[in-house]
Image (cartoon, rainbow, N blue to C red; front, top):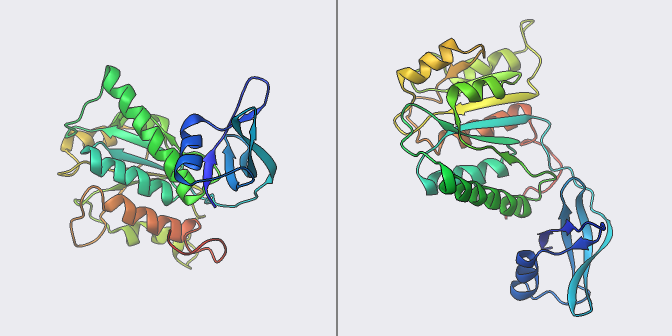
Amino acid sequence: MYRAFLTRDDHGRVLLPREERHHLIGVKRARPGSRFLGFLEGEGWYLCELYQERKQWVPRLIEPFETSMESPLRITLGQALIKKARFEWILQKAIELGVTEFVPLLTARTEIRLDGSRASRKQARWDKIIRETVKQCGRDTIPVVHPPKELGLALSEFSCDFNLMLDEAATSGLAGVLERFTTDSRDRLPQPRSILLLVGPEGGWDERDRAVLAESNCAVEAARMGPRVMRSETAPLAALSLLQFLFGDLGAASGPSAAE
């Protein structure tokens, strides 16, 4: 069943935005009486029916469409800005993997700098990717993508129950760092309900970045992903999958399981 974003006007009337109307009618060939799932921000999904009123295509809300697509684990992904296509790919896949907030990071080795109109266009592009991905995977909320932030500022604003930094130079592997939450010993810690995951740029973290981390009041644990060096767009998705499996809902028995 096709999904579309809906809006409300000042009088509370539900509307089908032009872009959604074009796709629903022009591409999907929906007709009066066609049913689809409509998303109202702050309200969730509704089973809807399409009809015409005074030559205008209008959605009618039939009933709430109850879903449970959000992970109990809140993940904020701090990803260093990298080349456009790779960065947007990370953004899309991270949303599919349940990331709650996405923070583009400006690090010592970040070559991409956004300002003025370019920053506005880029933010609009990211927001569009998020909304398209939410429709594709059926999430119940719209994740937030923040404007790019310096590493130090991000650490002060987004500290979580557990702050994790992927670093190929780390002395501990990810399994060892997470063992305190998964071991059956008396030393086992409560599972984190929120995680800040930091991923560096191509070429890895610079010593200037590590200095920022050392001077921060935010306790961050560094871990390497394994014996092989992963690209900047591979490492976060591997880590997100593991974190959601251990502490989130990736291993859940209920809900859709087939890839779309």
